[in-house]
Length: 409
Image (cartoon, rainbow, N blue to C red; front, top):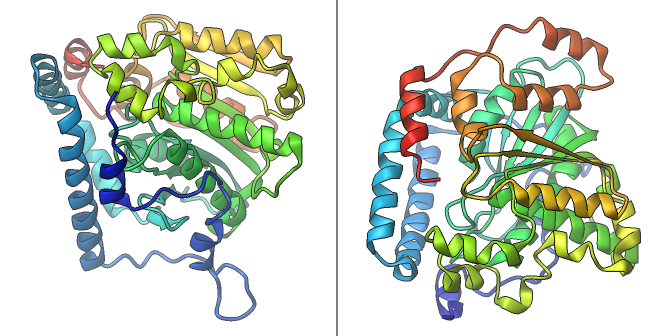
């Protein structure tokens, strides 16, 4: 196993303490009024020059990190073929990606790169409904990306479609490897959640209706943050800036929750053991960052009782993270008395649920399930959902079918 400590310091500086609240005030202070101490109502005043400058700085950072990452991945046959497959996959879905990108960069309903902390990548995007009548439910979303290529903009399609149903979506960015390791990612996610709880009302959100959701690696990171926060609350030994009991529900999409069982699986798929163990801070840390394993500790009974309802989604044809990952996690939660629901989608792959199906438009079982849970108890919203027009198709069916065949995921 190799060490990346020098590279971390070169790119991101010294690592921060493993606490979600140490720097929470940094992002919040940027929203304070000059008098009165209340966050001011945000305005969309992103100038073209500011957007270009921000895009250039992020491109430089991501490029630099990618070069460091490639040193560890190497340029063997497996990665070359995966890169070519990914390029072809993205090209087939390009018609949809272009439409989502236009929405992301030019819609007045998108607030990009809101600062929530002082570490690199401590930014989040907000997707706001056009309807501003009353406070809206909020989904705090942690996107995937194999712990190495995650980025907040990957949630733009989800944000766009949920915002059309009067749901605010906050996509939390976080440090990726080699800029940070798993403890940094969990800290960033928890800090972003804290910022949402403390500030979302100023964007029209309802602090009493916040849902946490993660996809793929983001499901793992957010589940770690959720359990870690529950443990802190149960022990009552330190202050915290958000409470798991305040969450209405946790949605885990195509996630992995027992890292011990995924090391060899990822190695065989190209995320080599030495690299993955470096991301997870070594073999000794695998238990800490495996929520399924931590649940076996009887001393965490009080922490588990604090968890919100949990719904796990997974496709049965997922080869990136097998559906057994969600099945086993659901069983572990049930054994500990947590409220959990497992929803499996027959024949769906890792990307079907998050990309191909939403790009297909029309009826989407996962999307409908999310909206039904979030709007449960709101008869007006449910009635509006029932009469909503079908979602528009963004990519022709032929291209979607071809993309599914060539997908490297």
